[in-house]
Amino acid sequence: MHCLILGGTSEAAELARLVAQDGTIEALLSLAGRTSAPARSPIPTRSGGFGGVEGLTRWIEDHACAAVVDATHPYAARISANAVAACAALGLPLGLPLASIVRKPWQAVPGDRWQTVATMQAAAEAIGASPRRVFLTVGRLELAHLRAAPQHYYVVRTIDRPHDEELPPNSELVLDRGSFDMESERRLIRERGIEVLVTKNSGGPATYAKVTAARELGLAVVMVERPHKPVGEIVSDPAAAFAWLKARQHDHDGVGSERGV
Ligand code: NAP
Figure (tube, protein in one colour):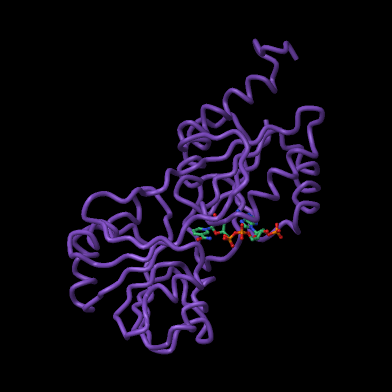
């Protein structure tokens, strides 16, 4: 069975590992191509956009994919909407099987000082009027919104180097892919005299240490809410996505499938 994994996350990498280990499903991992040196994958990989819903639909058809797993990041809403639309248009009448790995968002716990905002523009406002020292961990693509609040000093952490015009004026850059532990997050916050953390609610353990460190050190946190992200059949993690793929393979190959096809 051929299938497509939409990736760019640790979950997609883990699912690729499980599929490679199993060795019976022909899966291809798709990356948006935003990161210059993505981690090596144990299964074949493609990179770059498909060209909207139409391009993705054509691609899935041309590659005779029998199932799609959307393992993209909680803030990557456009590709997920495209996947839902493409899969609905294929494999009629039921649509092509689509599973979406949905990471649980982080929840505030006692001691957290979160201010939740809906957009990156609102995050820039929420930091406040007086100059503050800000730890900014929102990725590269939406950094430019913080240029609207040039009174602050920013420690900007990204995987790839942003363009100069994306960075707020008073900023220093920390290039790091993570994952991050409590000790290094605590050290960074203390050494840079950070007063506010601005982050997306990515969920998952890989980047949670900064939230715990912020709580421990009494920092204010500006938490940018998740966008609405269309989904297929929800699965909780890579292991569940892999089990779902094996079930689709079972159906596809007709061995003991409920429909007997
Ligand atoms: P997005 O806004 O949902 O997607 C924008 C466009 O990028 C899509 O319409 C699609 O282009 C292309 N694209 C996105 N993911 C793709 C994939 N896995 N394979 C092929 N094309 C893809 O996504 P984004 O927020 O820019 O994120 C891009 C990638 O980075 C995603 O794969 C995501 O998992 C990863 N990522 C995002 C964040 C974040 O905070 N947004 C954080 C960590 C990782 P076409 O319409 O031309 O097909």
